[in-house]
Image 1 (spheres, helix red, strand yellow):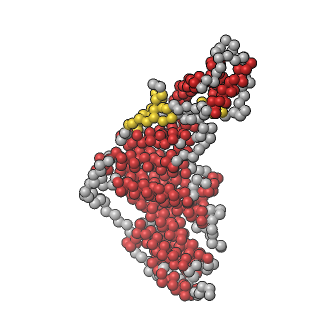
Image 2 (cartoon, rainbow, N blue to C red):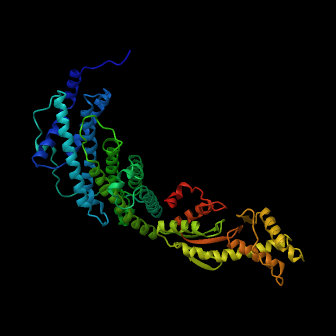
Image 3 (tube, rainbow, N blue to C red):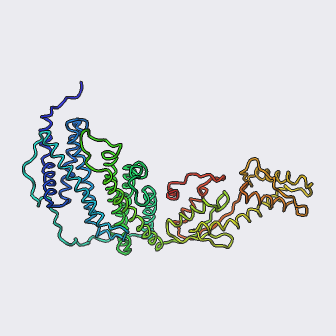
Length: 513
């Protein structure tokens, strides 16, 4: 037996009973907007959000989404729900900004927020106006009385309640601060990689929504920042550490503003993907509620733009905090197995150190190198290659691979045999197959061992072979940075013995961004 149908008349009466409060709030907003008499308030948006949420659930339980008569009413209800939520987030940002102690950014955040609120207010006006039109067409009774302005007013007296809760004491202040700052830096790197760099031109809008920017990615980032805010509130809020370190409340403000901006971005992206974009769902015969380019302009040039700006200035804040709580130590790790400190390992180490903003030095055989600079690390290859050649010559002698005498015509064959034998012992890695020695010049007056090691050195420089080594280098600096360097070294500095790119562990994924 199939589902029982409900008549339109009975359903209209049901919806009428359940939507009186929503329709009153909608009528109030329409009247205020037409008279230019008011502005959005949190009490009004809270009412619209709560009532539209309940109404949408009722409509969906009866299948209104897929009904030609009720699809328009349900669509406007969903739009009111989404944009009243966005508006509430924007008003929260507007009211909370003075308490966030935000660092200065290039764009004017206050004006940007005001413009975003005006944009959302205009959408809500059109959505509520259409909702009332749909209600009249569907014979849903519309209340005659409109709430007084005082019902939704938001009169806020000056001042704050005294902060008189007992201050908690933490035994590990350094660990708490560094944990929070490090978590922010890692998340900021991931977030900035996921979002577009700079302002996006109109022609790139749709590409961005199907690429770096999507509701799914924004929702994931929002959750991560929510977790970070919870981490702060659990371990730092109302502690002695928060009182003593004035940068901590500033960091909390930046975490919060980024979180709320990501929530607005998530909802803007959702509406574009589902209702405004070229591949969106649309109720047949109805006019689009929002112009796609205006929606994306607010998403990209307000929500995404200020997320990027506040992440950037808070990154410097976190790096300075980490320097104050630096725990210096020393580690020893193997040199990169493939060609030493060439481009990839040197760049990854530099990026890692710069990520934390710390001073880290690498030392090798009495010489010091600035780990922030790839060019500095490149220089270490001179010592590494020299040591490789010395160790290989010693190994050739130890294995007895060079006879006392050999005919000059057999020298090339002997050198090839020595290299192949060393490869069998795992002392040499051959990258060129077959290995060519065509350009070798036999030196009649040179010792055979010298000719062999010189030829191997040439092949090394040409990149045809590499010499395996157990050499180690030392790094000096912040304990947290060195822990990541140790992990990077254990993973082969992001490459295998043949220089192929390999995945990095989850903790180091910011290095690939």
